[in-house]
Image (cartoon, rainbow, N blue to C red; front, side):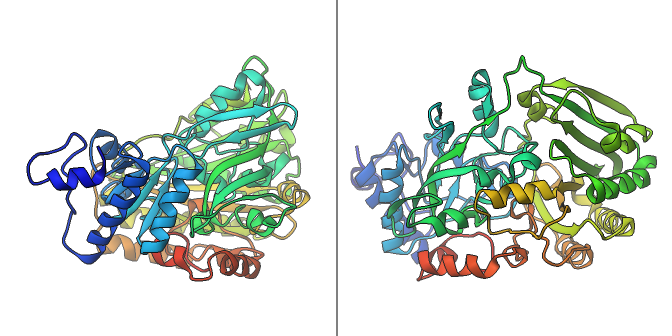
Amino acid sequence: MRFDAYVLAASIFNATIGRITPRSNDATSRSAFKTCGRIQNALGADVVQLSGEEYSASATGAWNLFNSVSRPTCIVFPNNAKDVQVAMGAIFQDKIHYAVQSGGHSAMNGWNTVQDGILFYFSHMKNVSYDAVKDTITLQPGIHWGEALTQLEPLGIAPMGGRFGDVGTGLLLGGGLNYLSGEHGFSSDAYVELDVVLVTGKLVTATATNEYSDLFWALKGGANRFGIVTRYEVQAIHTGTNAEKNWFGGFIMYPNSSADALLHATEKFVRTVSDPRASLLMVFSYNGTEPTPIHLVSLFYHGSSLPEPIFGDFLSIPAAFTQLSPVSYVEANSLLGPGADRGFGQLFGASAFNNSVGAETYFTSFREFSDYTFKIKDTLSSNVLAFTPILDSQILAGRSRGGNPMDPPRGNYVAIQIHTSFANGLTSLPPSVADARRTLFERMPKSPKRPFYINECDASQNVFATYGRYKDLKRTYAKYDPTRFNIRFTDGPIGL
């Protein structure tokens, strides 16, 4: 039974997919409701849902609780690119607000959800496959990195993705950081071919050498602004099977008394390390409304041990707990957990600075982060300040594959992430939190020409403006969306 039949019967009974009536009487809701009906008539009630169990689970399933309170007028569950084309064409024609959710792991409010609009939800498109002749992996947009790694592990290969299993393919559109980055670049640098539905509903295939090469390049860091990717073909990375312990590492937990030494060690790592096989994630954290500090470093080396000249400072600092051993690549990606906890409001913030700023800049970052923590402590579940070193080898690897919009200058730098997780069930924040965040972003050190990481930013930050090829990105956006439909009808990064 299709949408029009349900509308006719709505005053008589509740259908099995739920009562089909607009959620409000305003023009926006009525218009979205009408477009949902048109799309459902074309694609069917299984693909386009306005209520029911799958609708409810998907509408409320975002990792960030703040993104789980909106209620789309309908959710489109595509089975293929054609479904996306039909829905996007109607959205464009009717000028409807929309959003796209793959893994659902965004901490930027509204970037993967919509109220009184249409949500694309890719849980029906989760296939992953390997082409041994081309040595490439094809991913549908609904797959999560943990699922992809598990399925491909017996073949001894992996895509470049993220560092937590729950994260989805949307990470690629923001560049992507992982334990392979020093050797192979940002995750998106491994693109081979992309199928993209543009805002008009047109489907194109973009590669580094065809007529859509500028779009291909823009999607290496342009987030959700350039279209909906329905197929990612990426270079396979030969990481080995679970039986092959090709990495050594794990994590070390430290008491707060080790914080100063950890800041010095992190600064030295960013300033001096050049080995592309080395990977580090330094996390300073506070937990609870009476913030308790505990700090953790995740460190891996693509080899049989942790070289002392690279990791010796971290190994010598007094620790509370240490877990280090030979591991497979899949095991390395699971040691910190899947990152799948729901029920908490999440907000990110970003900064970056180069490898010559000196230790005092790291100490300033930590002081500002600590001040922010105690200003908002009554709302907290946890607060994290994370340092991810970006090695010069990562920059060179990306350039060898055609470059990306971030285009950082040569030399190591460090990406900064502030990750605030709020108290369980808290769905609105007092103005004092917003004030504290503005102050934090104003005071957090940053270096010119060092790009912020858009996957771990605040929605208010103009991350694109920190990109080395910002002007080229804006020019490409204007080419593929001359009416600025994406900017007007879906939330995402500012600056284009």
